[in-house]
Image (cartoon, rainbow, N blue to C red; front, side, top):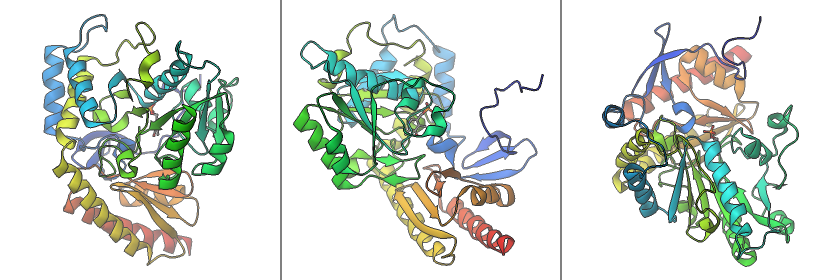
Length: 396
Ligand SMILES: *Cc1c(COP(=O)(O)O)cnc(C)c1O
């Protein structure tokens, strides 16, 4: 037998973390890494946040799981808090980003298949280089062929449009269109913010034609950009929104938020999840909101993001042949390179103990824990500068 016990679907690297301390990961061999990947925008409070650990420990000892057949004081409390903080009137809890997007897709279709709806509207327009997860529906929603290979047939009902191309989106709208599914800031696609014109235009198209506007804020949401959700930067509200990653701070949790109107098709028995919204996950979600959902914390993220960005802009000026530009918002930053970003990201990891994440469009994602401070940003620039210098001299 040559297959590994862990199904070999990930190209895992040699870093094997066994412990986390604030913004650092310590691996099996004792090596210490600065973690500016944050589990890909998950560990927004770092790795040993007392509030989050305490909440999970207390809830684990009190009540870990009950069925959704019973009333949920814990779920009601977290849902009410999210409703108070967003455009939404109602929340469904699941355990991951893909599940949150699945629920969003079902909610949009069910809206139109409601007795007062138009059941011919089943098709969702999605955008190039999007990432929505790895389930059948969420890979079908993405145009990325590398995720489709081997899994035919895909699900029907998705139409791909060029990201940030409002004219094409408008041209694709027809009597079959149910809505749009879009990341306000693409994550995997390379930290690419949608333009104001594009998101405002999609909102307007949705209003004109009675369509659902779905935002996938699984990566860009939860305070990473300096607002609780990225849509707030644009002043454009969705009808439905998928959230996950940072919302549990490392505990598996996802949520689909919707307005009352958008959720009209999601009645009794229409959807469910065994673990979704269990008391342990709710305690984690509440602890994360306690930490991030306040103006002081968000203002700090904004200030840190502005400083980091200014320093990055200055830094890339020293390496005009290596780096193209910096993009993103808050502490969701991307360093676009003039070559494929994977070799440089591996170099930083293996030779300078700096963890970042490669993304599409030749970009390195710089996603520090939101609680990173001066000392960590200083360490980051020391490592990044040394990394760029040694990378360039190795190439020369
Ligand atoms: C990560 C991600 C998902 C999928 O989340 P999982 O928890 O891996 O299922 C969906 N959408 C976006 C934008 C993501 O970044």
